[in-house]
Image (cartoon, rainbow, N blue to C red; front, side, top):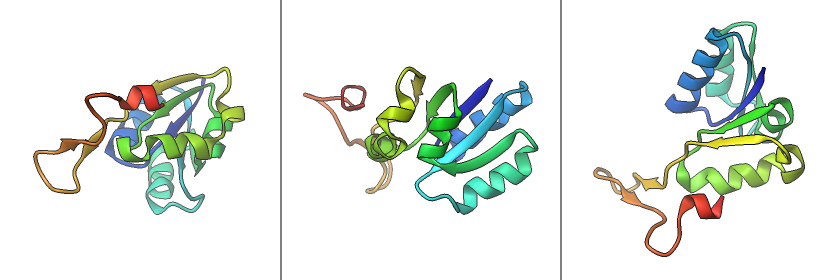
Length: 119
């Protein structure tokens, strides 16, 4: 199966590596095509790994994993493009934690709204 992953952090890299180990093809997407972390991951993950933009990963994958930070989740989906996401399964594992003020993190979205609702 072809799988797109949004996000180049620890979560996206771990999930992508495991999916490749299970025999799937994975394209990791980021905001820019030349993302250093995505390039390093693709080189280390093997022949079934590739990388590009969020739009590239969305166009490639039959299933999409959103592994972005909560603060970047909705913009990543907009950059991917509704036309490339239409009809696909989106597994959202982003979270609304805001680490900008250190630990413990606060929620960037709460009370009358949720990140899931925004997505």
